[in-house]
Image 1 (cartoon, helix red, strand yellow):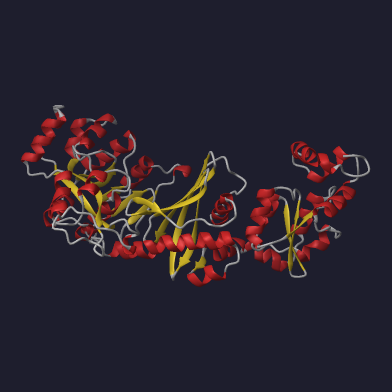
Image 2: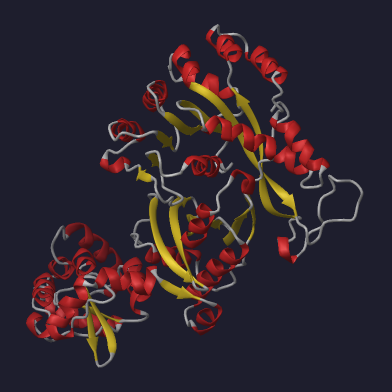
Length: 542
């Protein structure tokens, strides 16, 4: 840049240097010092060069034009921006109008806004004075900004008509994906960025299937930025994982969306988990072991275990195998109002009436172990521990079961009897553990053959051919497959003596325990599922 006018050929490098040099000061001041020219002249020249709106009013005079909705006071100060309403149009005054990510975020919030570069020497002072002396209506709007954002973005209504009337291609596409996923009964939406562009996948019945194709001309980053805006995340952060949530109303149902953003070599990926609260409340009211798919014998065994006065009932299986749902169903069997039932979970997935449910909050120091200690001082009869992840929680849970409480919990293990090794590996005393343990339920979720396109083949293991109802997968819905091991004195003695797992498994078979795989084969014989599905979910030695 020369003394008289900016040198636009080197402006890019000058801008980068000024951003580094400004610290907490004004970008215009830093650039003006490099150029050796008055800041006002630099701002005026930039307005002509880049088409910026030129602000001539002083900070106090801008106050009546400030509109703190939908951009909050906190965001204005954090990003050094001033949202102004002029003649019905948005003008956004910025300390750095070349911040492309911030400009995209502003346009997502406001639809479209003209840019202005605030007066160099006084830009930050203008910002503070204008915000501090804004009109009463603007301040009231700021106080309600959080609610306004929730109403407009977090609680926004998505329907076929709203999608058709939306002008933004990115908003229209993402709304269509959300509605399609909810209608299909998907548990998760995967938004994946690759060398070839953006890809959408839906998790249906535990399996990823292709979702709607992204045909827009815009870049995948705009879809990711839209998700970040909805979840109130930092759109400028692309190198670190972020978590958030938002809510939409889909065809009259409030659906919570939990968002996980993860960077990758081609940009960013997102996973959106759909949680229909009304559906979960309805499910919790009708949650029974029979409804989950347990047969008469299995239901009777679990009910008998839940009637024990004390001890530990363990449910095991991989992530997404329905462990928590089974634990809730078991709790429902004893939730008569005569006992104090307390749960500690991460997160609380079902709301159960008459039960004290405590969410884990590790950021605040409320871990499973700390929460469980507090629960024991709250005079419980039955306790549900969502998951045992460490030796400390395992020790406390075992002691609770030994001191007169009935403890329901889950743990990750490959099979029912592998749970024993898992606890011993965590350093739990085998005698105490086996004295507390009353039963183990190992389970998986198997996809059911789609009834709409099931073949007329006499082979019960033949797969359905696929149809629109099942999205051409041949499967629709899932059911539980299980192995239940009631723990008796013989099994306790074998474990305490550290006998091989093979001998313990043989003893369980002599007791009439049906293996998980044999149970699944019975379902194939009844025409409910296929051998292909069994091989996907159940290993040969289970």
